[in-house]
Image: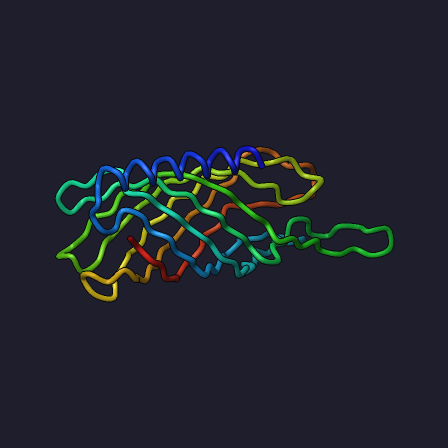
Length: 194
């Protein structure tokens, strides 16, 4: 919790300093995104399946620099995957079941966007964060690489839609039986900029 408060304090300080220096529009962006995540899983017997998990991401980013059509920003993301399988074939004392959990990830990183003709922006981002997939599993570091597009409703609109593909890689070993494979998410959402 202290790390989250520290991160939010740093983000608030960056927002305040940026707003004091630059009164231009599109300094801060807040958005909410629906995610559909594909998890590749290998089941007993050796066959591979893909598990699809729904979730959402809440994002905030602050512009750090602008040069021509480029916009560089620092960002914070809170991601929740709903019903992610974390332990397949778990024996609960009576039956063999699959354990599912809602998994939260907090991450921060940098994004670089190139705006084309003030109509839409193509962006890429690199994020590092942390998550705990189960109360009996250690905390893991997670890296996300994201590419996507941001499209405002019109040139001066404070509202925008965004879409992206996110490639996620967890680091750190888990106790035997827990799974947390690399995954790919498709995200579509909307936001507000000021």
